[in-house]
Image 1 (cartoon, rainbow, N blue to C red):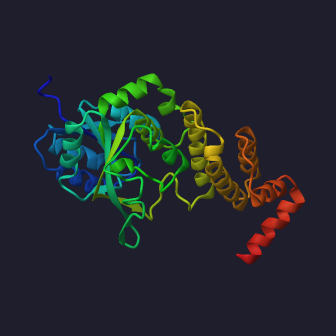
Image 2: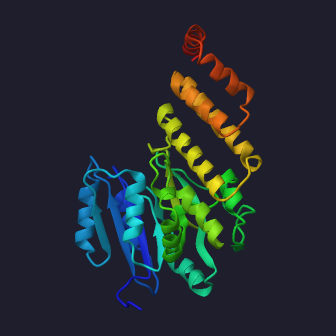
Image 3: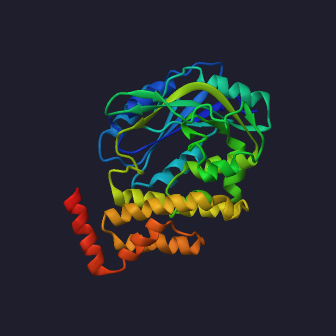
Length: 332
């Protein structure tokens, strides 16, 4: 046993979060318990003062913080998974640079569960929404759903996670999981984590861990999740939203095939999300993206909703789509 190795590694992937990164780091440094931990910050070549703030914390806590200053920008996936691969702890936690923990015993509660049962691979908790604009903090409606038993059997959450039942069933920024389990999953299939077409980092982790072992849940609310600010999935930008959801659809399809889930079991999810991105593309007047979504539905053998079929049909006829956009501007 390496006595100098920390028990827990906490990943903080950050980009252009100068207004929130100090709050995130303070909430991690406030953790209490009889264990050592390290904080691995992946600062992804921010254009604001995020890097400067991270350097100040790294200088103040050199025994705790490992700062990875990326130049050039790596992008979300490479930044995040490079941080995890740099971790040395038995267990790994994650806190995004705009979220923060509110329970100083969070990690201690979770590591005790992992220490006590080797068949449990991940422990997660309840959480709040934190609207950064209104300052309103509300418990997530997903807390304590019927998927949140003290311990869920191996494989039991895989399909609900892929279908987005009570999404997210596991909020990764509340989780603590085994590093050795991650490394096995990663080394078996690095493409699942590094493919540029996939636009999120949490779905593949949650699905893979659900398939790998038991998932434990603590009902305590330990984290505030920030909303009301720009993010990669922000609905304020229809094209950005389209591209994000397109990437998650492609990732879901990859996971579906990897874990031998039938088309029927994911039919409603595909119908709903493909319809959603078609409406985003149509409202933006991006006819190419409309057809991209339709082609994806054809490839996945998904029967489009009637409204989706109408919108994609309109997008192929120039004069009709021009009239539709004029009417949209009039009524808005």
